[in-house]
Length: 351
Picture 1 (cartoon, rainbow, N blue to C red):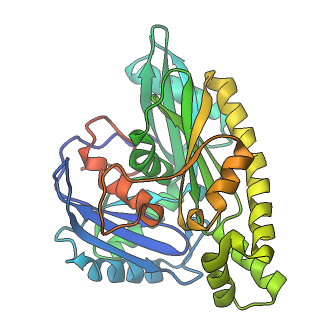
Picture 2: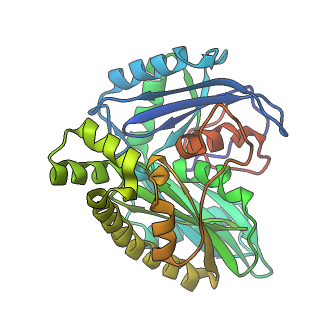
């Protein structure tokens, strides 16, 4: 089932980024040059509420959303309309090349045909959408995304339980590229990588001036590094986390663990980069890192050595002192979405 794109002009909304362990809320003023933070909050979720992007306890999740809204500073949002990210673990994405002659219903049919050929999905059971990225003389590029209807409906129902109205739900990878990737210029021969080093997983997003091309996940992140330190040093989780954050690669025992993570991740990155080059003819020339694990001392340099390209700490397109780029890139990309005039994804029906 196709959920049409949202309209260009909408009443005020605020954004909520969802992950297994953290919720973040952000609402910005309408100023394009220097938006102000109207509301911001970030809370930690206890285990068992969300697992791999799926809601396990809707009542507890709704309660957490209410807490997130009530604790926002300098004041809670004055609207109940919310845009929300859908975690990478519960979305499917693919990039299609379609003849330029296809438009309207014919384009819909061709996208469905290609999706059913490549992706192991019964589209009747999924909410899906696609976005034209680029039109050339003979072909056009299309980005397709899908999520289980059951997952989408669970998010919509939980938001309703929290007393809010879900007006938009998009894959977190699109929010992240909007926040970070769009600030970097690429030419017809190059692309960039955004590497999101989260707690449970590390996500790699490869994009260029046409848009997002590829999104892949590596099932290790900051939590797996902490757990490895706990096992090796016989420490509590709290002590291992402090050692990881305070010492990083400067501690010999921690260095071995982080280097193993970088080594394994580097192999997966090379596979994704090679696939991107084969599909596009472009080379990835720069990587931007974000997420809590990206702040570990010495990790950026180790990663640059392993993958063989410059690696920079990602910065938001607009400098906002109240929020950290490493922890708030997704919610920022979600919050600035209403400023973008081009058609964009949504897994929920617009007003």
